Length: 551
Image (cartoon, rainbow, N blue to C red; front, side, top):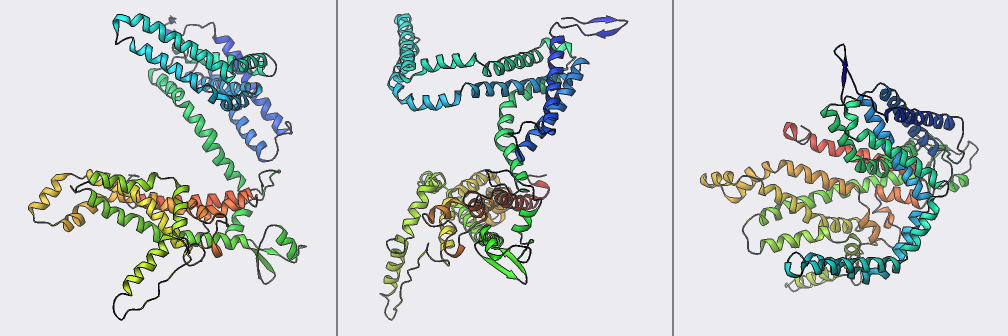
């Protein structure tokens, strides 16, 4: 296409596909506006409560985008091209998903996964054919024969494997279903939207819409990051915002959600009291899920409020003890591993192993170690005191604590396991930071007569400040999110431990969400914990000053 001029004013060349595109975008916009009106007027009865609000918000955003795209495309502006491309691309993806859903494609994948093991021996045949095909380049004399043999072997193996796993009948069923409504309607809509998105993407649209190089690069950037962005919106941002909405409801995960405002937050923080004289008896209060109640005058406070503060106290105590014990030894070990000790690489691997070990397996092993009757920890304590009693005049009784059954030691056991599993990773981080310190500083310190301790205090520790802040922040976040260790250690008993000694906010929200089915309350606990973690993390990074991460 070429541009012509009329009285020195450039006129963009026409495109035969522009008019159908304008019609499609206008129809798209009308459909989005109609969807908004339908939701506002109470249509689509299957969408109730929070789902209706989410659908309405998405429909409004789509209506605004498509309407603006239709207007700007008619004006042949680049912003119309960009918005139209994004809207059409999204419609093609959604229509494609609905097409696969209509033909029961995903259940078919499950069935294929169940029979896939039958074709594994034939898959070896496909690999052998690929090997023959690759050897053809290294044996020019018989290369043509090897290529033919490799292709035949791969084709026969692949065909036999498809027949063995039952894929060919599945393909026939898929093709038979896809030509029937509603699958064929979604397919046609997806092909149409994808075709127009392709037209807006192609270079022939550059001149039609007067797109500059920078604008084209931005559009290409949106396209290439779109899979990640869609995944982020669908599996992270969307559920995150939905959980924020759920915090203002009494949703149980099954029935319709009722809006209660800040009721969940008030209940968690102990700001909301329930009166026994407002037509509710003590037994009815218990029936609403309160295990205990505490009467203050004529008011009753639910035990869940007390449990939240108990969990918060536990995790704060845990963090105050566990975070320093996970960082200071890691710093010392990293300093030792940064020297030229023999077998230093072996020790680096040994210290890092706990960080990659499976949490469940590690916790089960520690559970055995902490057993009050057969555990090695109590056995080691017993043998240690036996050695002490060999000293003349010394007669000490060896303590045999019930580590996981006592409220005084259960949290201590969790601290030990947490520190053991985190120290190795923190050591690697500190070691990486130390290896980034210029060696010339240590050489200058040697010339000044500084010893190892002085160099560590005056050079290593100050220059490790950014690494230290990162390690402290990440370890604190892990501590505040404590869940796996106490949950597994207390199996088959409740994860809150004896007298709620290992109850944490994550365990508290888990029990409310999946045992009591109070998703609203549990989501509110999660958001309060998020705000707490975010504030602490922000404080850590702000402490770095002008040279920190947030500079």
